Image 1 (cartoon, rainbow, N blue to C red):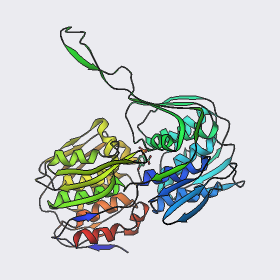
Image 2 (cartoon, rainbow, N blue to C red):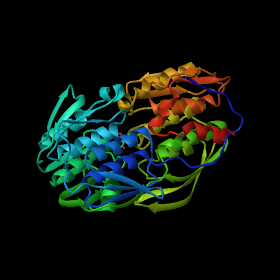
Image 3 (cartoon, protein in one colour):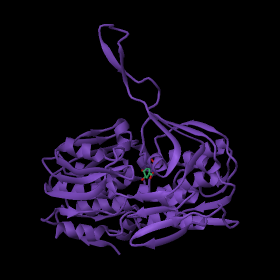
Image 4 (cartoon, rainbow, N blue to C red):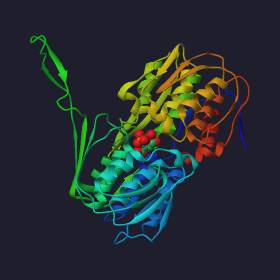
Length: 447
Ligand code: S3P
């Protein structure tokens, strides 16, 4: 049933959001390859992370809980029942990370997904894992896929697309097969996998390449910045790399928090989100908010389990349009639905480029955002790799479509709070993919 959402005059307060989905997946799935127990504080019980937890159970991981702390106890030896099918639901992170784990194990497993996940591209993991020696059977590189793990070959790989899921799949394949893997990134993607491997294990080497000052060949009196390598980051594991186990304390999910920050930006009010993840590979949305005219304050900054976290306070201001393009898009890729809602209320035309990946998310997000913005009365042009959004002050209520996509549902639920008249969102339960308590939090910030 669609959910009605009424406009509000009240907005703000202090909240915390559930644990980070990306980190939750990794903590659950790494338990499959760990030598010792992994304890997880603040595991997010959203539908996606529960898929990863179920997958870990299928590999024999025992799950117990005491005093709110989850304990994942890996099996002595990695086995799985013959012909096991693991249902990944809507979760691409579950599927693509499992690809790596299975490819590097001596096991045969079939992965399947819901309609949305079955449409999403898997060639990005199938190609490198096949090159390492895994056998993969699929129709047109989509789920369902049968993977026959093998003893893999050492692998040296430069990511052809900036994808943390692909990076993680290749690293986990190496870890499962005890073979060396060297992954290079031209664009730095979220680094939760390498952080967790460093925290829970040994034998991971991460090298970030920084630009250096060199003499300008054209004018030797001048100096200029130069990248000494053609890539920005390199992650190496070897046959000795292992996960020993330990504790992972998960911060609030920045990508969920972003929807509540967007509400503050649009309403010109103030919201504080406590204990939220601030990993710099994830927080490009804060830079956008500042550039668009909001005030952003960060307090209580600290590192826990290798991940930066803190409290973020956002106060909305006079919003102006910005251009978002290039490498920085990766740092806010999941926030573009929230960003588009802010852009709809900004002065001028916000242009987003280099975001073609949005077509391969839970929905074609470029089309989904455009369709919903148009319903509100916003002029929005859809480009091959982005959007052009012409902001307006007074926007009308609408019956929004979620397109079966949790982030589209959350973005347009927040937009609905600031439109003229009551709106509705179809399939509101889809928010459970990443944030089951989303509507209670929305009630709290508008009470
Ligand atoms: C994720 C990586 C990103 C992101 C997704 C979660 C992860 O996808 O958009 O929501 O947890 O590794 P890509 O790897 O496809 O860029």
